[in-house]
Length: 357
Image (cartoon, rainbow, N blue to C red; front, side, top):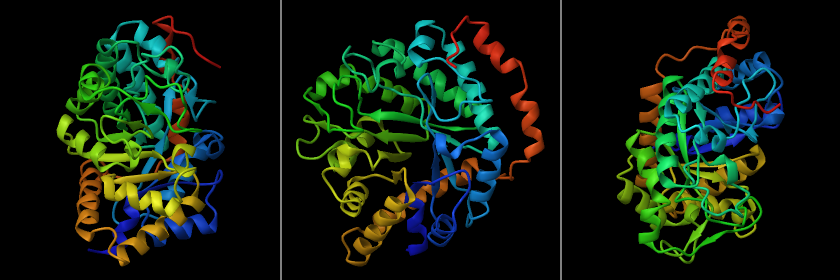
């Protein structure tokens, strides 16, 4: 196994509108697999494309995953110039998978124009608990039937627009009251209860050929009473076996307090990879570096099997080979045409949907 490939298991955040020298060195020398972008990394489409070009120059053989949470509604990292779509609950209430497909196709086309190639969307969570604020209107609906059909349409729309989709948050974050950004939620349902509700949209996502599945920071008693799903081999094995899911599994942000309050960054990274995660996600480069060093030490001390790393890297490279063969840097002058195209807003307007400012 080539230790240079270990960096492919990491997606890291960056600190600003351009890369620092430290960030450049980390991404290039460690062969980091991808980057996640936030509001503080975005000014306008031109700046975003320049930043992504700057990141991709550092690639080894394959381009990096350039990822974002651009769901619509209240979760949208890029605002000015991008079409501002309503919450997915409002979209789901229109009961038109065709609309959902079209919205996600436009959303993807705008992201792809700037060089973004992975969106952490759609939410497969069912809003089955009225007191759930962390998911709430990020969900397509309050029943599995509604969520299933819109999840499938969203995945097809994103892929048609040349952006990879990521189904989240397995095995379902819709019936919790705690927010895993700040605390560790618990799910007390039986396996059969999960199969009859929470798991159905994820099964649909798997059948729709979603390329990424995101594991949630939840303790699900029926799967593992001791560890949150992110760090639970039983949870990853269950996803693989129950959904027949063969593609990439990624953690939710490992800096969320559900994990970081209970484990060191190095310890959590090693546990997640040993449990079954292919990619571990960090919002800040400092924490990604700390976790990377912990993983390299664990490999050296044989706490992580090299054969497991090889399998993960193979899945990552397989995805990149299939989708990123014709990579070209973004040509900035073409962006003005895309972001001044009135058709994108017509998709929203024609369905009388509200557009958050």
